[in-house]
Length: 157
Image 1: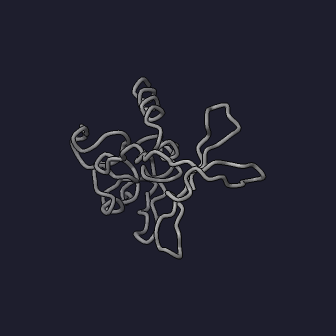
Image 2: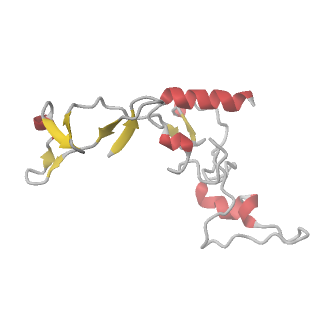
Image 3: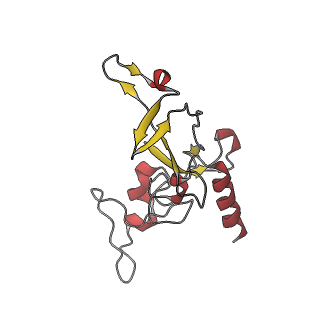
């Protein structure tokens, strides 16, 4: 299920969920539309939801809101650090993980068996990958206006 606050200052939410008829092996939502169900002691009417695929996360630049045709990135970006390399090559080529034996003090490499500890989201600059559910952009992936506003704020800085 997915809960969406009805407005910024609202204390009510809309719940979205799929209903599966395990006996018939089909989605049963159409037969329930218009019926009443009790939730938390309140009667609620089941309504059909409009399909909303959300805002696209383009997997070349790892930014939200555009497709391949709208992407201006010249090179592939890593979702872990934003560097110009594939995620599969991150440990070998990213400066944050490959280490620097000539540095003083020595900067050790992150072992291949361990995750990167230097992650930086290209969208919010948080300590997670660009495709992480921890990202504030992920939480607003169905709100294209919020994403546009946030990118406008970032560009002004």
